Image (cartoon, rainbow, N blue to C red):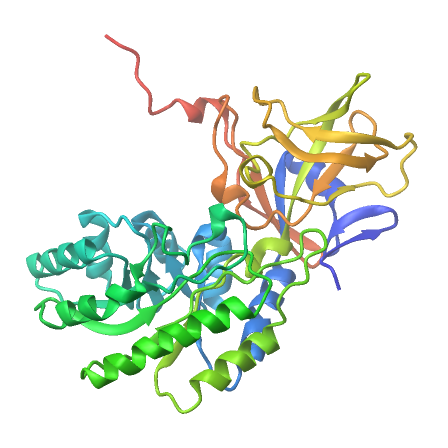
Length: 415
């Protein structure tokens, strides 16, 4: 059952009418469903019940500390890509020994911060990073647990901006160079080899790319064993797609079965790094129509949300469904582009949608739980939106709306 449905003609989040939230906190506002996030996490637990992997939520998808706290309570680990995300995980009650640190550009300060807190492992993405991590760990008398992110040169079949597993992508160590890097790490005093990592992209809806990548990774694992290097875990990353429009998402049981069949008899622990599939369909962006603008060529519904709130349409030409909050509109339907007030032609949230809306109406931009708030900005000096979590018949503000004075409180006039 969808966490967002019409009740007495009004779209609600669980049992909370969106009109109630809009009246209380204003718009634009991100609204999430606690039940949807919980069910999405538990779906992984059910699918992988016999292998019991460590599921590390990819915090970049949505890093609000209430969401991190919710997943920590459910038993999640975390995949982070910055020192700031580690600080968020710690503030949310996450355990550092269930954190994997990915990303191609870790700074010395970030490495030191993660070492001091005893994270599970660093997903190292280059030989230069390996040398830096060894040096930093030595400076503070630590031994860094490392897993190497190997780029298997597998096409995930997704948008080029979210494909990460090809040899021309910036991520990971080339498959052909991996053995040499592992042998180099084996000789370093302040690193300890614990695993291997792979992440080929995002919004993947087919099983074949995962199977191809896993087969290439397992081939490396076997060759490492022949060299005397035994691993503690195999990290297959994340990237499972969700339904935005007419996609057919990969079924988790089929995904789990394919992994289980290939890893049968292996002793390494499995790690997964889902992000979008845990939060994407568990959130929406609530916005209000400010103006209806008509011309001979195009009709526009100008709303109070914009590309600074939800970057995905402008960045990826991404599709998000648009629903009226009141189901039985009195306005005549028309075909609109849903656009925001930002001074850019790329400021659109949806194009060519058949909507029956009037000025002042509320609409919901669906499937906005992932890469919405986490990618938002203050472009055009626009305060970032509030965030709300629906929880049955209750709801909670999990982020206050920014005020305009906050946006320049750290700036200074010239003397």
